[in-house]
Length: 391
Length: 91
Image (tube, rainbow over all chains, first blue to last red; front, side, top):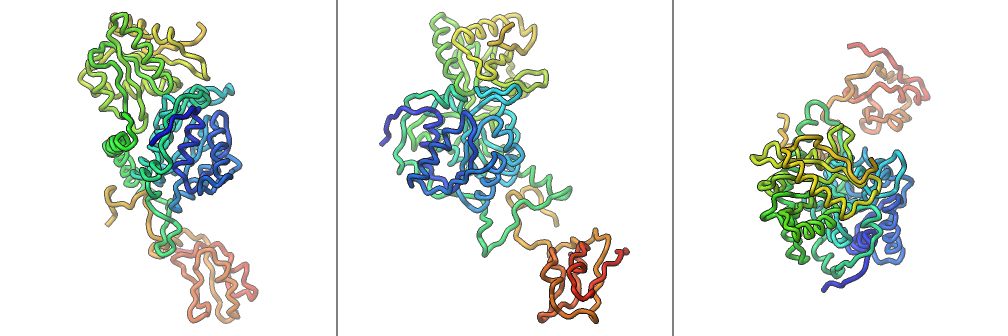
């Protein structure tokens, strides 16, 4: 039996954490993710969970404590955002390399400078190469579901995960959330699983030894290969999740794509607004669909190629810029994926919404007419455009 | 035989104490020289050695494990009886 409640993204993630009942949560507050661990700390205080709560003096310490606890066999979670995730950066690679199933509730927020507390994806994108699974949420419901799902995936694959929501847009916006019973979540997740346990005194181990020219390569190829293979396993776990939790989630979500000639691709909350625009454009007779990338890491290249195979023109929405002179992160990944595809749509990047700049229905509609025009001109012109900006 | 990438332990987690099987003392610039005639068996050297390189047999200091000693000189410093000298390492 599930129940319907009204929750913000942060509240939904805190509730998911309560039901997950991690052994250890080590955290440091940061806007707009503070509430997640703040609400969770009240669950600890009220004895509603069995968690050891470690308030640290920085995010670097928080994730370091998470690494230690996870290596000791504990189910470990934390929450952070922006500069906090950036401060964790060094340790993120260690958690990935040590294959520790830590789960971070990450609220997407712009990186300084200039200082800004609002949503864009630059923080999460900056940690995309750390060997973590990255799952984007469109609304509080997905934030809730995917926090539970991430624990299942991490503990089955021994890979750390971060589940993201869009700062303020999702983290602080209240929406309808269907919650599972505590018992259902407990049953679904089962006992915590970690790849090894440093506290097993009968079988002493060395964690994080030195590996130079003679072994480092083997260890990293093993990690890379495991992440490649994890794609099939993630799909299996998703299938099982959908069956158990009565959802219908895929690694990428197609909308009105069957006969579409144009496609709008996005991550996170904007994907919802895009579906509304697709409906509107369809009423005017335009053959347009959308693609929402749920899993950004690992990158489900094959599914994206398959989704775009009959598309003439594709607009990629990027809420981050790579500062490489080639646009945003999602655009560059999709561009690379299409290189090995036999059918290549005309592709254009639309970098939008940096630092929480609003994107509305009109902006998205304009993107559709722009990609249509760009496609008809056979992609002549700048492949990267910045929108929602004063020009 | 070195393991290939399919065979290495997950995240290179290996059993503890493997340094015993590997000579880690080959980059010493100075080495301790034990003078048994001055030694009173107080075992301060054994207590302070950061690398378990003081060899003990039947409760007595009998020498130094040069396969693992890094030549830090702590044993020589803490010895109250001047029974350990530090000399230049020569190969």
